[in-house]
Image (cartoon, rainbow, N blue to C red; front, side, top):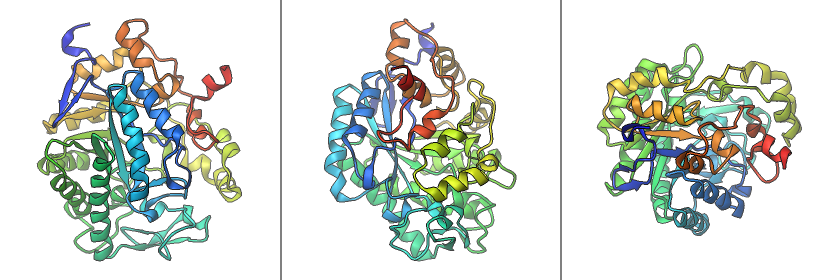
Length: 399
């Protein structure tokens, strides 16, 4: 293997020195009871760090209580900062960096503990998830709502730094709030936040700019963006290319290139087998189980897995910007990691392969293995809802 394509070369992201070019992608862990931080969450990320990842990303921390899809997702507040600090310290002891993903679910909210009367999003809409908790409608955000939520992102990012995180990742993808504004199908506004791409991007770009301005220049601010939403009428690749240019202008440190819209085409992101039966089996809510049986086949479509399935789309962004890019989607083997380096992507993100084996990167670096044992069966998606949180179901059964 040439040193020029080795994923184990160090990389400097703003002021952060990463020991190699591979990060653990944010994937919901199911280890945040009552929106807090469990010991299991810290152990999970410590294991990823000990296994060789340069940086591990703690998934989905909402910037407000109302930004959770359900009550057991983490939301940022002063009370959890000490527990997060213990988590980051554990990761640092293993030689890795830690990033915190910050987001807001917008109209996806299925949380019975809402402070507001109804969830909100870019436009007034039917909220299928909320209907299961008695809130079938979502309101359009006012200018005041947009300003308050923007400031909530900034405050949450400052709290993440206080807790010892080395970076933050702003969630602009997967159909969550900032993605809902970018998507023409869900943003039907007629004001300065709707219509043209420039208007639809105004809110997400303002979040990125203000977070960047309020944090030290050496502190990395990443953004997860959709290459495309994956359904007709959604956010498309040419819009992503322009969004990438704008984010680069606003000082964003790196882009994590992803895709999919959870309420329209949830498995556009995952590819591989569709574990719908297992998802129904582990769902605690009777109403949610019924919804999965009725609507699951339409919303959770099955896509064939192939290595580096987002690479053809990601190349278009690579041609458009000079900022660091994180290649995601079907990254499993050493060949995949080397290909990403040859194609000019500074970093690669892995998720399911590291859930299957947290020590995989150490094995790759030692030369004892070049391929992950992850199928992918995607049963880890269902395992997130079981007691104990995310794990590889096949490994669990084997032990």
